[in-house]
Picture 1 (cartoon, rainbow, N blue to C red):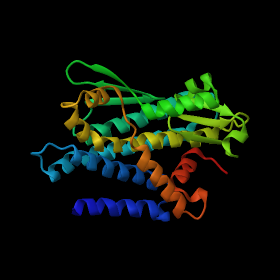
Picture 2: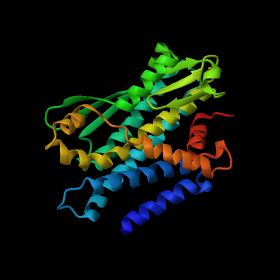
Picture 3: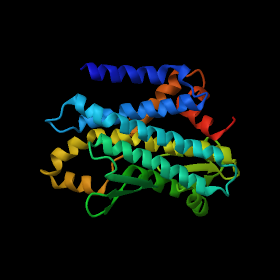
Picture 4: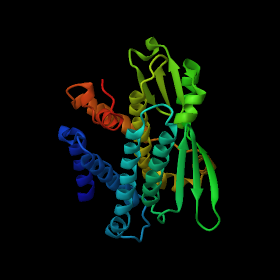
Length: 283
């Protein structure tokens, strides 16, 4: 009960304290490491074996969340080096480093040995690599990203070459279809106004893609629910084997709205400030 209270208090402080606006790399790294440590440790406690003691799990896993958080920080810092669309390898580098950080956190949150599983997400596809004994490759569909991307493909114009450059589906459309926005990141894709080609804006939206990936650590929290049922129910067994349910979008959206409601204006939103900080985007 005390641990839950501390965690709840931490999040209230984190998302209502405007002093946490990132004004330097030390603060930015501290945020990524702190949030990664907390999310990972909570996941490890949820997924611990019955005979394991909570404190033993915390000691074993907290540092892995911190390492993953630091890599996620560095993945965003890589974007600062991008000055033109021709430097697309840096987008891929940023994405890969971010996935490495998330993989380390997910291993710890699932209470698995360090480095056993590695995950890579691209569009609505999830590749899982199990390095134990003989390496095994596993594919899972991300259904929410699939549905959102399919909807985008119907409404917008798909930019194939641009999607290859950024390692993420990119669509374009007229400004009237974006309600006056120049671009935005949604579940599974980016969309921009067809005449908007600012590299800083693209970097800004790409940071949101990385944020979405980082908060996927929350999906480790419902794994015990699937584990209990997959041995008794064929549907849950199939679900666990073939789909990766992105339930993290619900709390992530809630946190984003909380930031919007408590901010004096849109730009005071913490997620937006982080995207501005690493992208150099000026409104």
